[in-house]
Length: 336
Image (cartoon, rainbow, N blue to C red; front, side, top):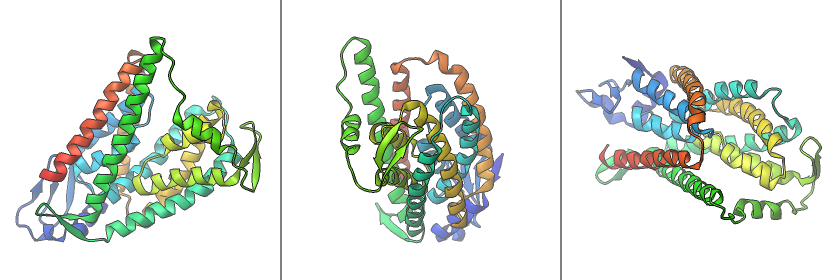
């Protein structure tokens, strides 16, 4: 059974106008593009993908959102702008569920969350603007094949992002294994850089009583929010892998407060980014519904399996999955 995606179909026809002139349908791994340019993606493939992403997040206790967009493009040939916009919209549901789970379990610094959101709004607007430029940038010939410039650039960007995340996770697992054998790990560069940034006295200086921060430059908070908002607007990722370490090491927020504040900021950021991407025509509602249901179920299954996947060695499986995804992206890029 296949599910038609109207928004994705529109952009398929816009980005690849030669498709509607073909006499035969284009059949990919788990999708079909009709001669009229309509895109239908296997519901089974989307279900497995959503369950897989949710399972990864629940099992390993780390976010898997950065895998969602490239896998949607890889498996279903969904244009990057629609994959990003729909992933952001799906993020609203998952962030709401996470917020409900965390209610009463931790602290939330609402003042910090709202200030981060101010910077995030700027970042989202920049990210969506860049995506709009790529959507209308036309095609480019690569190795004898005509590719949309958006497909080329976003494939490279996601390959680099996934590669960086994979390397960081590999370093973290190696450091954890060394500490388990009694070897002291060196101080993290992020922690050293963060301690230096905390000494910046660029007015206005504000206090964050809930976080126990007596004085911090407002511009540092805005900068952290802008960076995470840019990632959400342009790549469709939550930005938590930037925001959480930045809150702890750069802003000096205790971990227990940073967790709750991150979820609060993520919810309002996802709402705003969804609104902005919807106005740009990047959200496919049927896709969002399928992803929300399947990732939620997968996450619950992953939580049940988490007890069996304890220890740094289990994260090495996650690293392998990341690099396999990069390999598949490269293969699709060269061989279609």
